[in-house]
Image (cartoon, rainbow, N blue to C red; front, side, top):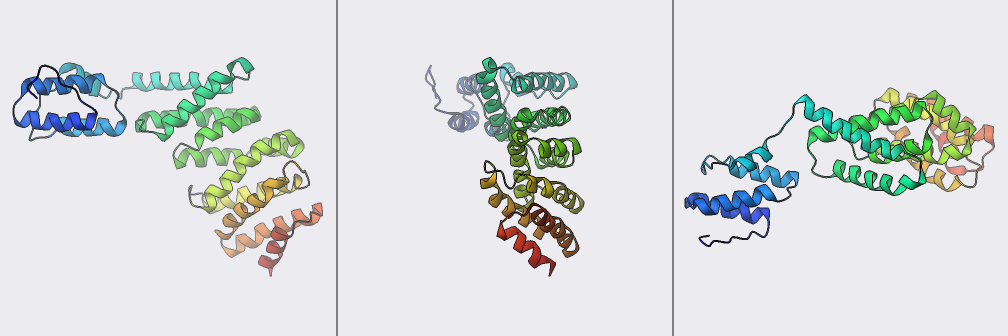
Length: 286
């Protein structure tokens, strides 16, 4: 502590030394601790620890100006607008279709996913989620399926409200339903989104009101039936049936019967020889 050179292995130990140095009024060591903290990378959790130690009443530390500037949280509109603009530019790279940009697109997707999963501030996460949701809805309107899938993969890292809004936008858009029912090449990407929706709803990862659960099931069950006989999609449907069943079982019996009428009719009309969901629907109607 009294040497000319002090080396810190990590932030946690630096903070421990800072507390002791403050108790001993070792000003040089206190300053070296603050110089280290100002210069190294923090996670959000580490930043919280730094703030806690520096604001401790018992220590009464005078924070160095550069460290204080870094700790200052700028929540004004200019800062939020800057963050939103940067995220919009990153999302525009995700939407770019040129093969030359594929590596950049993958890097941006990985970065945004890490930011949403990591210790990023709540304000930035919310801005990021809002931008992703806006672009997701725009991709539905333009029927840009490949972008829709990529954006949804990122939206899954957001909070439940944004995920719910994205899923409802996807599951309730009639133009998208019509497109998927008409073109097989679009089906797999959208069915993956619907599958996630059914799983997340049935497992309680997102909370969807009863009316939305019923609406989504009645909208998409006929579309699922449309692709039952396509060999390239057949392997998805066992898993999808199980996910649908969990959602059906979360509904009152009157809704279960309504859904199962749709479900059973899909199988009858298409003469699909898949026993489990058909038998289940018949059983639940008894």
